[in-house]
Amino acid sequence: MSILPMNLNSQKRLKSREERKSKRVQKKKEERIILPLQGISILQREATKNLIIRTGVVIANKTQCDSCGGEVCRSHSLVQKYVDIPEDGLKSELRVEITTHMCKKCNKKQAFIPVSLLRKRRLTKRAIQYILSEHGMTMFPRELGNLIGVSEKTIRNIRKEYKDF
Ligand SMILES: [Zn+2]
Image (tube, rainbow, N blue to C red):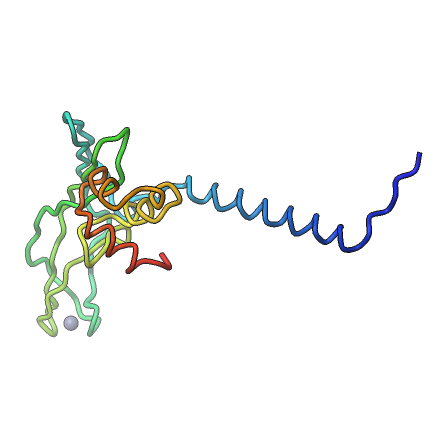
């Protein structure tokens, strides 16, 4: 029995089809990986009837000024609520104490926001990841907003702002 050798073109086609497939698989895998809440240690997880609340603390805090490099001292801190990814169809909220520091040299005040949280919005980065995921993109802004606990407008804005997230 003889097997006819494939011509170059069909070999190429096969290869690129395989490559495309493996890229798709890779992308799916990446989407399933949920970003960790880096820089935050979760102390408590509480589930109420329609909300999951995680309480965390910032692991490392600021020691140097962003603008002059001078030594900073604690000014004040406040518990902030961040929208996190939904869990079992429930909204989920992260409560974390954010500390504002003051520079001893230049007197500039600055809040220390862990990398896993957004600076501009009260959302975790993984919530953004969820909104922009393949699954999230199949949902209407209103539906998705209701699920995670933000307005329809916020969903639309995030889809525009974080295209390359
Ligand atoms: Zn400074």
